[in-house]
Length: 407
Image (cartoon, rainbow, N blue to C red; front, side, top):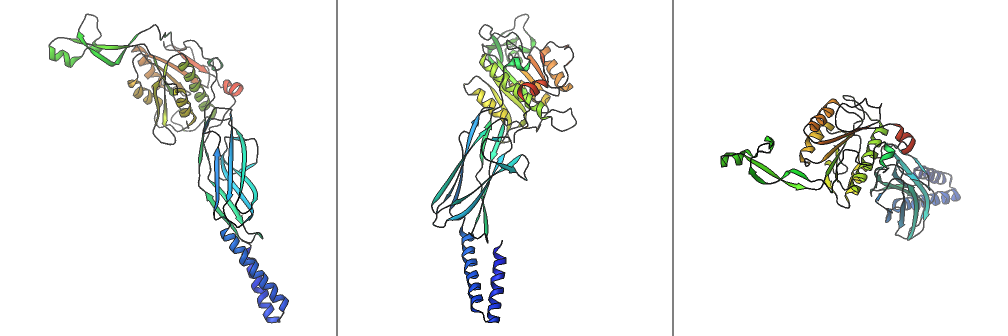
């Protein structure tokens, strides 16, 4: 602070005035003492009763939409502030259409700065429109306020700890742009015409008939009655679809990230969810990582609730490249809770042998499975019965644009 230098000068002039017996010099030193005292008090109390607020016009927006950031600084005292410097931390993933930012020392963060003055009981409000061209879960804040006295002798800084969050949903495109067929991409399933037996919902038992599968025999009841009994399952006309998204983009055991492959997988999951829900499926989402900010499993059970698509898009917006388990383990674990007539679709950039082996076993057991490969070369002719689709890298580069990972 400059105040220390001015105080040193004032003391030097005071001592010199006494030694030389110069009254004008003495008055000048006393004037400097008075100015330094006023400046110190001004700098000490300048940011007292100064409030900072931030407001977003929306907390959740779709890819490509605009949202308005409003910041407000209020001086609730008689002491005016000749200058106030506001610095607010913003995510790098949003584009300001008005205002300027500077790089921050934090990764993927920028600083929005604005210099202004505040009178007594005065309020300053600024609005900054932003375009959301990247999906993600973004944090705004904290902010810092700098101010001081009129002469610039003493400065003070305070932090406004308020943090606001913005969720930007991933982009949704027609399946044709991803190279996926829009009509029954994973088998000819007519929801309204076909009736399935759900092995999770047991209605009761009956006597064994020739040809019944041994897997349907209820052994405890058979032992109690002394004759074979077969489970009777409830019928269902709904079809579940479980979407499994793999966040790994590099062959194991290596670790790393190929950003555009992860974004391509997220776009594919969002687009397929939207299409399947419109076709009457009950869609669920399973990602092999923990979710933000709760840290719990990133899983959404199948449903056809009107808000199901928004729940899935909200989860996909928070996807990060942090694998907590292999996709093969996730498929094996979560598939047990899905009805037998469900369709299991895996979206991955790294089709490991363990994953392919699990899907082959499920297909041979009669389950409906599908595989979507993102990026990399065109896969060789498939030898398995389940559908395999490939989304090339060019889809992201030419049509969707490369979108870095949001933080």
